[in-house]
Amino acid sequence: MIGRAPLALRLAVAGVVLFLHAPFVIILLYCFTTEDASFRFPPPALTLDWFPVAWAREDVWAALGLSLRVAAAATGMALVLGTLAAAAVHRSRFFGREAISLLFILAIALPGIVTGIALRSALSLMEVPFGFWTIVVGHATFCVVVVYNNVLARYRRTSRSLVEASMDLGASGVETFRYVVLPSLASALLAGGMLAFALSFDEIIVTTFTAGQQQTLPVWIFAQLTRPRQRPVTNVVAVFVVLATAVPILLAHRLTRDDSAS
Amino acid sequence: MPFRVSTALHRRPGLVLALLLAPPLAWMGVVYLGSLLALVAQSFFHLDDFSGVVVRRLTLATYRDLFTPAHGDIVRRTAVMAAAVTLADAVLAFPLAYYLARYAGPRMRAALTLAVLMPLWSSYLVRVYFWKLILAKEGVVSWAFARMGLTPVLDGVLSLPVIGGPSLSVSSLGTFIAFVYVWLPYMVLPVAAALERVPRSCLEASADLGARPAQTFRNVTLPLALPGLAAGAIFTFSLTLGDFVVPGALGNSSLFIGQAVLAYQGTAGNVPLAAAFTVVPMALMAVFLVVARRLGAFEAL
Image (cartoon, rainbow over all chains, first blue to last red; front, side):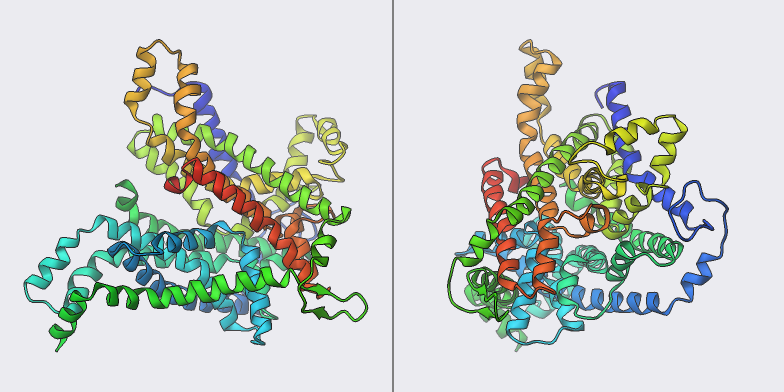
């Protein structure tokens, strides 16, 4: 825009970008190492053996399945609750409106461990057994915030007069919602939903407190971090997780580009 | 019939509002806020040392326990780490954000934004695992130092008190590096957003009035970027305060708040002490949020 950046600045930028992305290249290399007892670098030799080994591991599949089901349930809840809250905050000025936005900021600003232990002690006070739904409840608290933010940003860009025009032309509330409101929200909902899904799929802190004995994929990886067993299998799973989450992130980014531009 | 309903609703905006708000408020207000309040309440109970049972009577005994030297150390260690990580992330994020806001053309901007967003949303655990692998004693960093003949430098750093340890992956320095890495994107985006809002005319006016580029940077750009830095700091500070994964995977045996909470509520069954420990980050974050709000960070989130 205004001339070229100074060399020092360009070097700093290149350095930071390298810092952010070089580790992925290194772990990719480690997927093929023959060394399975340590993180020796450079790898003594390369092999493709670890991919079938990882594929055959039942515990990985079980953890992956649980993570996917939890993420789907939490995202579903977040989509409904987040959209309702965004609609309420957007359409009217009311007493406590600021408090509600603060509550949503709080849910992302407070450390996850606070949410985790708060839910855990509340659940055990009420003697709710830990299981699938307690994990979902924990995840939904922060997934709601992501959907809320995305939908609110979209509401701010869509004109209120469209809804009024639709009503003036004789559409019922349901019809207006179906043909006017929903289409304008669709891509924001999709993006918010995908980000919520990615967040839930990756969550470990809150999960540790609400999962009981169950292992989601992050819990599985955390166990490998502290007590490694067949390290190359963990490397393969790690690369798979990064690649699998990249797709929804790229899509969500495409869908909301205009919201952040305005 | 649908018409009558929608007309009726249109005339009563209050009713619509109540219908819209009830489910999310019930959720966030009751489940989330309720649990938080219950947690704070529990920090005023205490664990009977002899019976190992939690006594449900209001007392400050647990807080007295929190301020014993051993527990105070945990709090101090975590707070210092959070501050150091926030500072390092601000220093690393600023050039990238500045370049994004001032120099990058549209395509470069899109590419760089994506380069920051991808790690932000991709698996945090996997990104911690990266560093376990890279910083291991037999790993790539040691190898690189050895290849450059700099092994004595690495050993020298590791022999330093406090930050050192037997290898990078079991030292405070390793914990610090991993923290800086995983939270860096959270700092870049708000700072870049704040810098983008700095009006070009202000910079030109400053230059016209005779300020050197360095003076303009210090007196115009930096103060205007402050809300963004504060917004980023909310994330880096808060995330570090409550984390138990990074120090668990990469640290030495000295505990952080997150690990203490996990240990006390788990096997020890001392939920009041665990609750009191979490009140610390809550209190620190409350102070932080008040300051950040003064600096205008909420508009930059």
